[in-house]
Image (tube, rainbow, N blue to C red; front, side, top):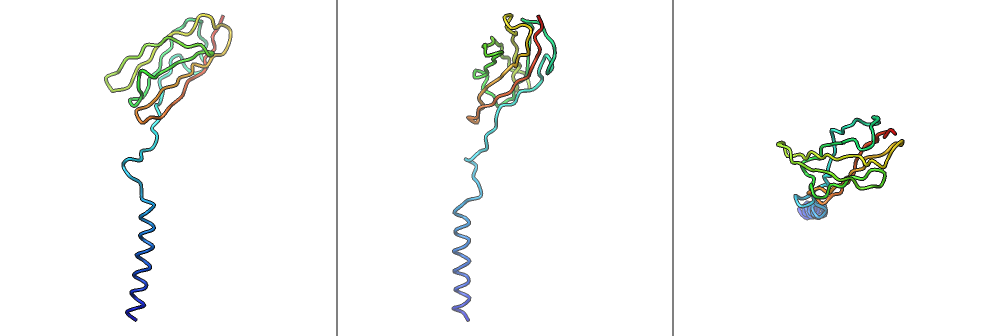
Length: 127
């Protein structure tokens, strides 16, 4: 009977060893934490004139130097300021050449966790 119990203990030890081999995660394997963009001005689908100002907020984990904004595939000149809460206030102007069309204010940026994020919103640029 003792040999039979030893066999069970050995089998259970082998099973648990295989389970530990897969691991339960580690502190070095961190999930991708993409940058987030909020507080869009003007609002989604708002009507604005060409050359109008826009702004948004980028999350704390965003590298501010990697923030890029394109409007109708044209790069926009932006200004990035750090807020007191650690987020970033981003502002710029719509191109004066885009008129009478819907345009997406497209944002891309990198985060501190080596993840790329994208966002944006749609506005209608009047004549």
